[in-house]
Image (cartoon, rainbow, N blue to C red):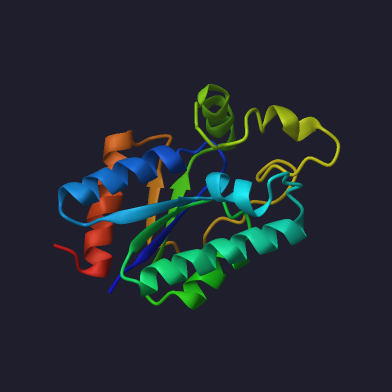
Length: 180
């Protein structure tokens, strides 16, 4: 049966980079997964995002439902999305039987530094610089980021290398979902 992992953490913590490396590591072992990157999907759901609570409710519910549908069709899924509220990730957990939450931990200062340098294809640019603007809604700065209470997997992206993080997650996925 297919599984879904939700990579969560502050913007700039390394979710996308680690998710891509985990996908590669799993693929090398014969386990394939589709990455649902919210920053890419958001462009279709909300082409001019406002980042309001109501909009986030819709976007994250849509993302959870997409992952559920893919898993039902036998496709393993890695969700790459901040999901600043636990309720978004809890919704996915309630919809998807084989679900694991992956917390990519990094201090806000590290995330801010990384975000300045990142070249992500779909991520909004300069989000931490924009956090000072009126009505800004940046998780961990002007809106809360609710850390997972009991993630199945956790890595400290400020202390662990990309390879260490990816290897740890890939190994834990194998343990949790009984992969070879």
